[in-house]
Image (tube, rainbow, N blue to C red):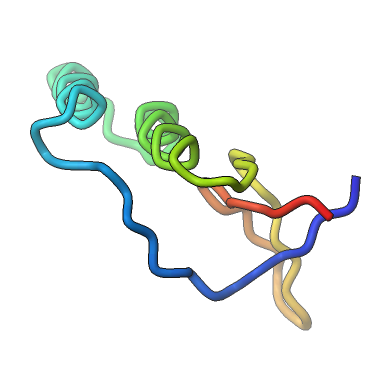
Length: 87
């Protein structure tokens, strides 16, 4: 599969509010981890990815977690998630 990487974030009208189930679940998961003194980025990434997947489902784009992004003359990075359009 070929993918095109877009660096411009389009204006999205996502249906996402602090009172939504996915957001409440995120805060509950973070609280549980915090109670156990687990606060690393890697430990919260799965909970955050749930929100990203929820948002991506509202678009016509594909979502890939931990998407590698190569940068010219710099170290590559891995994004939390990337929405891509298949062509």
